[in-house]
Amino acid sequence: MSIDVNNESGTEVDEQAILDIARYALARMRIHPLSELSVIVVDAEAMEQLHIQWMDLPGPTDVMSFPMDELRPPSKDDEEPPQGLLGDIVLCPEVATQQGKDAPTQHSMDEELQLLTVHGVLHLLGYDHEEPDEKAEMFGLQAAIVDGWREEKGLTGPSPAPTVS
Image (tube, rainbow, N blue to C red; front, side, top):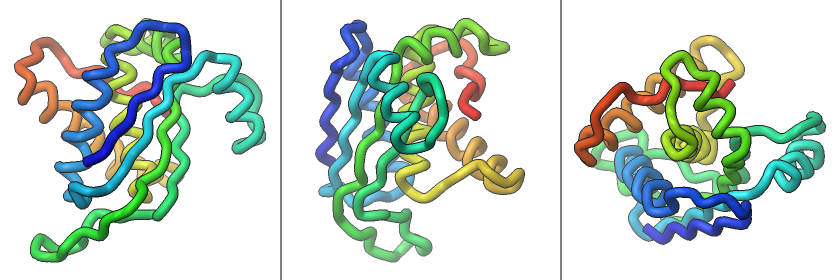
């Protein structure tokens, strides 16, 4: 799996954890190991510009996903996954910091960025949360992936509650 993490935000973030959880999420979703992903960490101003340009919504947001080859997880266990470019995930540590503070189970900016990375990966794979059943599926998968990664890493304490909407 080729995953690039590019921090343009000016904020120190745990880039290795972002890389690790993205790799874990893609493996768990059975995405071809030669697929490519880019994760870009930007400041609030850059995120606001992207949010306005692509969503026509004001203010910065937490995560945005820009799919390329529209890869999807294989539908059958024995099906060979396609290889390709997943696309870009853009994260904003300033928004992540606030969301971590506002969450029912307060958590750090880095824990929120890990959650947002998984959220972004799922969006790249075609998952959405517009409808209640879609939201239940996506957020259930998101929690299972974050919990599985945290368990594998030996991290203790509660997993971050989903704060993305």
